[in-house]
Length: 228
Image 1 (cartoon, rainbow, N blue to C red):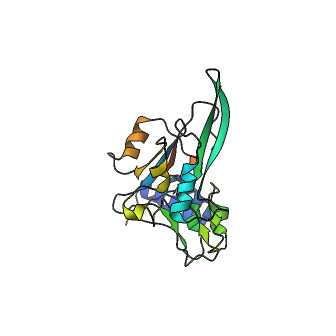
Image 2 (cartoon, rainbow, N blue to C red):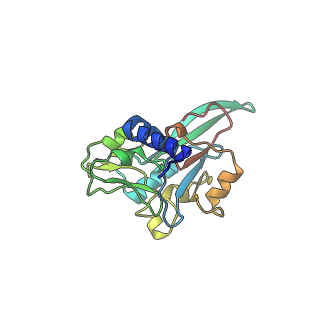
Image 3 (cartoon, one colour):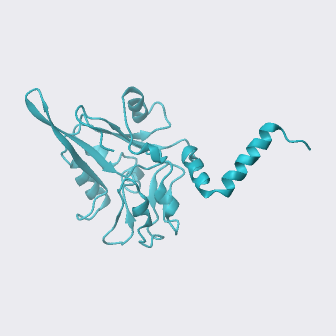
């Protein structure tokens, strides 16, 4: 049976990928595969032009999810003080799990404890499987995981998956924000608030060059640099 020129070239390329693990890794980064079932892919947006740094979101997260005081699932970082109309203005940026479509923390977990829920796109941890090896902490390029001081297992933001979200309510941080700086919803629903926000505003995401496809979006503040 004859082989076309295109088929011959593709065959050589496939053999090269199989023979070189670096090529395979690059192919996965350049062409990431995302498993989505049920057409739900939760994401969040943080509007830095609205955030006042009150940290109510952090307190709500601790209370609703029973997070010990010495650790946190999210943080609000001061992004600088700037002069505007003869007064000083401060800007803040959210730091929390990005719920990546292609999460490196899942890829390195030796027990399958770290996983991405195929029904929602939420990245989470099976605490009964976690052995506290810290591989996922080292692999996360956003440095948002920690070891829970009581369970000794990896922990992080899971969009209140077991608390508010399970009860049909938005994540605690979203619900409590006094200035509505947070928007949460299904990225794959064009009629959702978050999809409309992303379509109508200029947004940025951190470290896109890594191929992680993060689902935490930011509306940049008016001053200074974007610190990814």
